[in-house]
Image 1 (cartoon, rainbow, N blue to C red):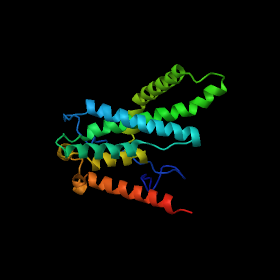
Image 2 (cartoon, rainbow, N blue to C red; image 1 turned 180 degrees about the vertical axis):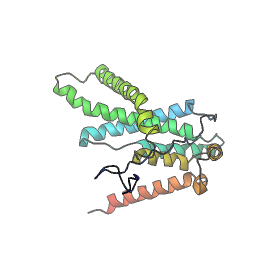
Image 3 (tube, rainbow, N blue to C red; image 1 turned 60 degrees about the vertical axis):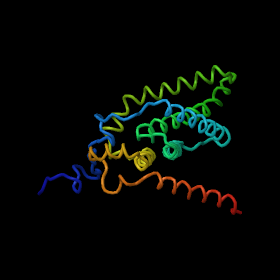
Image 4 (cartoon, one colour; image 1 turned 90 degrees about the vertical axis):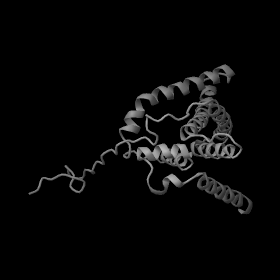
Amino acid sequence: MSTKSGPESPNSIGALPIQPPIPFAPYIPPSAHLPELTARTLIVGTVLGMIFGASSLYLVLKTGLTVSASIPVAVISVALFRLLSKFGMRDATILENNIVQTAGSAGESIAFGVGVTMPAILILGFDLEVARVILVSVLGGLLGILMMIPLRRALIVQQHGVLKYPEGTACAEVLKAGASAESRELAARSGTVLGKMATVGARTILTGFGLGMLYTVAWKLFRR
């Protein structure tokens, strides 16, 4: 009788095969030197974070739920910097676009956290003073950052390819699709760009974004 264990013959009856983690390889190698935390990324990320944060706060207070801003902010960032590059400005690297989408997503996340805690503050008998709301926002954001520091290596790096993270994966694909020529060249040198992935540009993103917008407008106009 064979005692071989593998994906088709688990060690115990009823046990599911455990998929080994895929080795993590960053899109941009750590040795590369690309602009990342720049003034324009902070400005654009802050503005988009305020816009999506205000809309998310309104939505969560009105309906009790909200939508993620990671992918829309990534699309807007890629499209905006690509448009500015047509007027002589330098196109943003993938690291700069990542900073913008992170800032915009963080603003939306903090707004959602404030929105769901504001009713709790009122139920506890406190007034919604500006200082109290700001304190909740700052402490909530710091708590999320501090918790993410130890969890990133355990849940993202070591479990790469096992835990899917569909939204994060989609956002990463958006950033890679709209990466600048400089970013794609460095990624190709490190072996993380395969086949036609390096030739995909922001046009694909804008086409999908435009089709989705047209569908939404048509659905709102012609629905009964």
